Image (cartoon, rainbow, N blue to C red; front, side):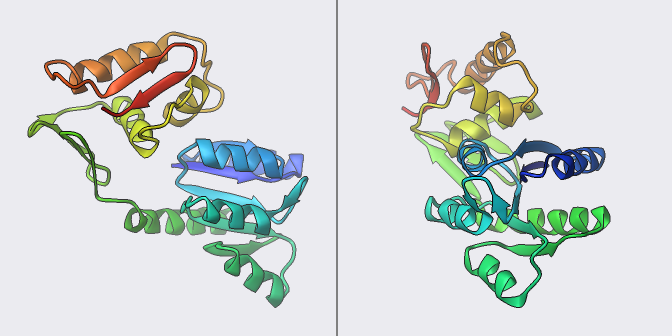
Length: 222
């Protein structure tokens, strides 16, 4: 499960990253409003954890900005402010849950799992591009009515391209989604993965769907 943590307290950010990683989460940590917004827009996360007090703006404003951009990833507000008005403001800004500091890691993990379980109801069951059909929940892929078997990494790449279909996505954004933020985007592992996916999706079809834009990235579309 991929989680984005936007927390400016370096020590707490390290504790959260380590604690959630031990629980099997794939964690990306940002420490500012602008950094969190960029990550949330470029990356496909299962849940987002937002601190309220951030350099460059509040977590409330960041959550509202993400919702205005139609990013529906479940958001957990994490803050020391426990007044009723603050909790209401957080929920009104588009947050799905609100946890006050100090907190137990077990409770945070349980709440994040609960938020992630709600996500499938927000995702489309079927995405269609030309004659390519992908069921995001069941991970079934067909092209021209023929079933296609993908590995976990191949599906993660296809899913990211589908969620950004028509747009050019760069190497760093793809590698952060398929692997993690510590993966070296300048190795040729991504090219190998793209070639494998292209053979399964495009070979044998007149219309090619996966396109390479030299120096820019990749795009999925006719």
